[in-house]
Length: 84
Image 1 (cartoon, rainbow, N blue to C red):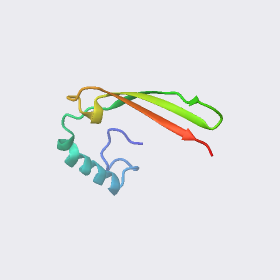
Image 2: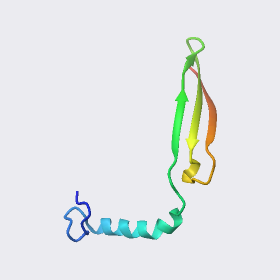
Image 3: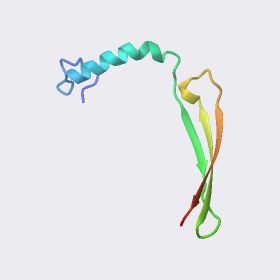
């Protein structure tokens, strides 16, 4: 791949590449203030018999939705599986 080269000088960059760059430039004002979202998760499946499993889930979300102005979040969940 070409890095730092214009699309004319790079044989890998075709018309689609130029269109993508133009689209990203137009979307840049919409992404002002966005940073990143990081999710740390823990889950563990617990067998409650041969056919029943329960799986608790805990997630810690840093910058939910990519907004650094929002606080971090803790998400709790449970999944249950019954095998027939």
